[in-house]
Image 1 (spheres, rainbow, N blue to C red):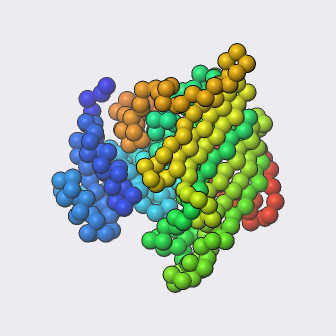
Image 2 (cartoon, rainbow, N blue to C red):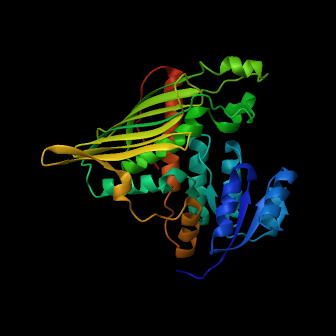
Image 3 (cartoon, helix red, strand yellow):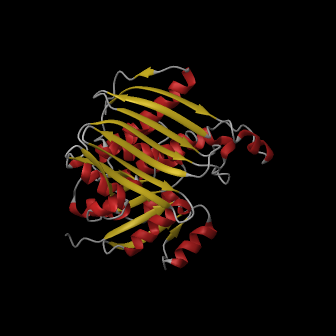
Length: 354
């Protein structure tokens, strides 16, 4: 392990507070610099972690501080400009999900990382959960055989981010539940499958539950989907089904990925709330009988969390585990869901150039 110590910045402390917490624990980090337009939040986080260097101006921070790396945890519409300016200033970037509001922005970020020879990692943190790492190991060992169908879901009963500027949500966020929640479960499903190439998509979006509540709250121009669904066919024949909702008429909030393979299957299921009850199993056949095996019994050594993995990639000069190419692919897929929904028809994907 390199003895190099890093000077790390975090911009956007509402979401970025968890980044600061992880960096404060890391032996690799020598100094942390904070940036947020909210001075109260800036001072609160600074006091909590005894951080003296605090900025309300992002460009001033980049000019005055020679940062090795920075976490970009600002609203989605700022991901591209902030990440690009940080890389131009010589910093490696960990960008919160989604990578960008659309494919064009994501591609510009990828090209900037290549131009400036800087690492760009997307904060797909669900991959670093113990159960996800264990299942990925099982899949990579070939125990599930050929994966042919995946269903990945994040469904909330009532969970809209009412604190967000939803009246201009399309411009600021790029979309609703699909780009906010769907991005997480889509990435982990694609990661389990080895990131196959999509061939076509049929998608739809809905705002059936939340529109009246938005009116009651005085939110004009509420246009974001509170639920979205999509079915992707991959070039290798695998089918992937995606569901995401901020609000739906169901019993409880759940996060689920279910996988069907020629030799076995798997399910990761969490019911959010009440202790986050989990049902995580693989289903493997032995001598003609299928057996349910708890993921816990197959546990692999835990990888670092997403922020530590980013730091490790910098000091070891290795490829980041959540690559900008993967972030671009997920952004492309989300774009196609919205396009299919708008056109009301399946869309064949002719080219997926990276």
